[in-house]
Length: 202
View 1 (cartoon, rainbow, N blue to C red):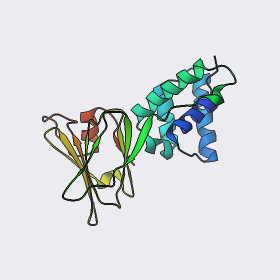
View 2 (cartoon, helix red, strand yellow):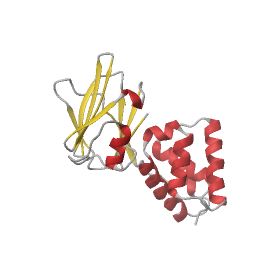
View 3 (spheres, rainbow, N blue to C red):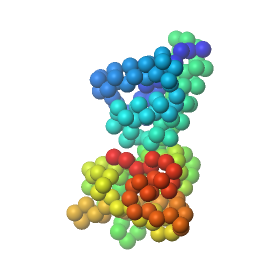
């Protein structure tokens, strides 16, 4: 049984997420994770919060729920490996990144998140109009060229509308059936409180 370390755990997340970390962030996160392991404060959630907090790259690829699940999977793979063979593990790519800069003002493009974990990526400088069905806690939306505060949130019954008019460039994301008709969605906080997870981030 291989020993879980800050270095091999972070390396596994880098492989699963496909991100690149600069030397300073890599060293800082490795030390932080190792400290958790040595002090017996390690958990998949604590490790996920640390990684997401220190690295915008990791945070941009998956939300805390997704990251925690990947950490659990990879930790188990490390534990099941023979000592000295961790670098031979083929860690799975748990989250699929999908560009949603598509659709027209008249006709939305459709995406279905039912068959996996997805990180839907919206570039606010590009027009889009999309509808996403089966959006759940293993999915997330990441934005670029804007801030979270730029986006307006509302709901039409059980559907949530997330939009931003970027000086005439329209961004419209509709999440089908993610809340109840009794919910009142008017910002990111009310949206994430209704769905029960962190779903939207820069």
